[in-house]
Figure 1: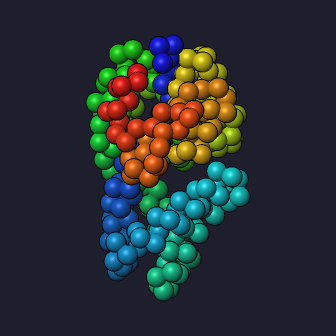
Figure 2: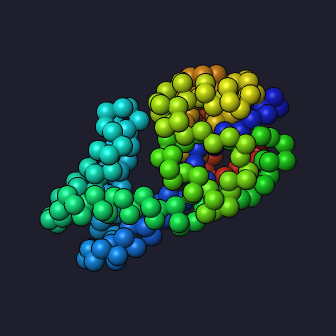
Figure 3: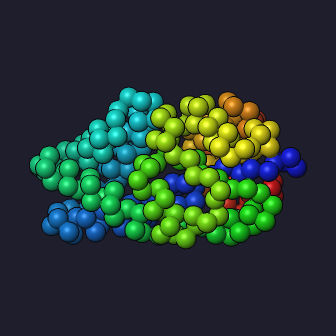
Length: 229
């Protein structure tokens, strides 16, 4: 790792605490729209559906509007709740509007960013929607740490497509051999980075992976990154 000069981070689930902020956003919009529903029950169904539709979105199998609609529609259907398409559209819009207003970060985010900024240039590569990612970083006061913020929408394809990483390297004036990607998705972040010759660190905060990867570093906490960089 002695050659590393550029550190590229994923945002959601890696630095920005998506699950906590998402739950708070749903709590607010359900109250605003008088939707009486058990939040825990809703999230239990919604989370795997959201994960599923983000995978389809990465694979270009659904559009952004389809993702936003279907993840809510199927959640309500699974809970046997009749909710009109009009209300789903309003909830979807308000969710995206309110989500970046909440500012919880993953444990150790500020500490690791302070640590790394002393010796590396830091950047973001995210599949998240372009209109909200910068607002998330402004709300959590971490935007100033990053030289470049690359969204998949600005490139036209999504991680793990090599074009996203190639574009990120180009605009950051970074050599792939001097760059490392840090993220929570083995498919989107880690394999995507390895495929273009970057090094990679997988953040397995849920301890879901049993063993270290052959081609990448695995950490269970952000502070463990200090052992390698």
